[in-house]
Image (cartoon, rainbow, N blue to C red; front, side, top):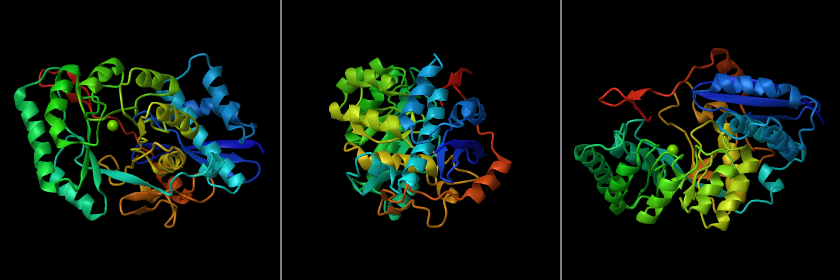
Length: 382
Ligand SMILES: [Mg+2]
């Protein structure tokens, strides 16, 4: 079997899908986007096209290693997101070729569904109580949200009090029937992270994500010793080599690698297994589309330490196209009582609505991250 074509589709809201075609008729889908950099990713995949054409798609590991090692400069968000999309598409092809879901080829499933949570509150947290109750009505018992908007490296007590009051009001409204995860989103720096974690500890979140920006692994290791809240890091790390330091310094007790940014299903399973050796939990990151979500579910199927799965259905970014729009009516993604079922069909286990993908790609998108500034005019972390 040989790879005969590599096609990318830039589709709303902010995604880039990849389709790999073979001479046998088997095709595979991947999601190779880095949010805000879709055109760069399309160019990177065009650059890799010549290497991929004619290769045996079943040789996933050799393809992974060759692209990772061959270019001298390795790792980082662009290269690893490109490898991610290719890895997903090749696993999709391999599963279809052997008429088995990806997880069956990776040792078989350890679970048949995974708990999921919903995003609420938007970029700048608002409307938390109403949104949380709506999500609970849909059967979910966990949500995640940004706890704050712009926060200076040292900010005012007034600002901290406002953040804490908003989250307290939510906890009071929903009691303990809803688990809360707080995303600091790299907006909080070390001085305020310590203050906020202390204030938020009584609210018993299931984890705090990116308590400081993920480049600050050492700071997070200090914070982890200071708080009883499980700290989570990983969406902006890009290989097992980046995660090595997280494990060695005990910086987190939950990790959220993104199979679309860390090297695909292959690398996420490896990182999940490394985490298991440190008794660290796995919660794959997925604010992306249905192909990335299907890849996450294949990882959740085989990693024993996976306990919850992010997904972006209805997230504030999803304007002009949402997760389920891109799969067929009976497309293999199923949510029942807050749990995502592990897809059992061959490959990634979903059926992409290709006609809709093509229609959306004709329009494309030019999504960019918002630009935020502090009151003094300096750039703020988004
Ligand atoms: Mg996050």
